[in-house]
Image 1 (cartoon, rainbow over the protein chains, first blue to last red):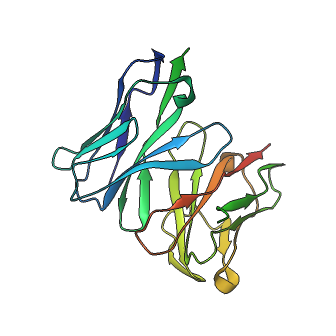
Image 2 (cartoon, each protein chain N blue to C red):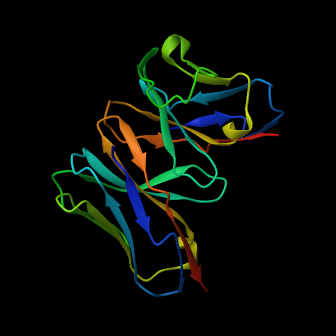
Length: 110
Length: 113
């Protein structure tokens, strides 16, 4: 049974710092891995999607890596801003079904 | 292009009552998914429609939950009778193709008192 774990559960960092969020999953037979952002009262926004054959994806200040063999992914956020404060969810899919981690609550201190 | 919409945004009901949640997917998306997040837990898959057919309902918790997608457009999720443990946020997502990017709605926050 696939399980997704995110560490840390919560993180506070000063504005401007670079940071890394970690995700691990137990079953390496995945179709893809996504990082989502969730703001309070809002839906989920897909930030980056990495196909199982890929190693990383980049979008602006965000970079996500995938090491399928070790069951790990990291989300790197460069030059953090207060607007980055949100919950970040890691999720893996095996075809249709998405399996989520509990998320990391990120707070960027102005 | 309009995104996935869900109605209502919030619902507060008493234990034993019935509640119906609605999801309107992005136009042209044949695939529709329901997920939910209960307090302190991760978001979990409930079921997947392809057009009007249930493709996978392995995540439905019990027979108090009934999902429909008549006509292959919008979907409803009915909880009858509601129990306290049903409280949480119910998300809907849609995709054009199977295994394609899923676009999520804002969720319906259900509180059962």
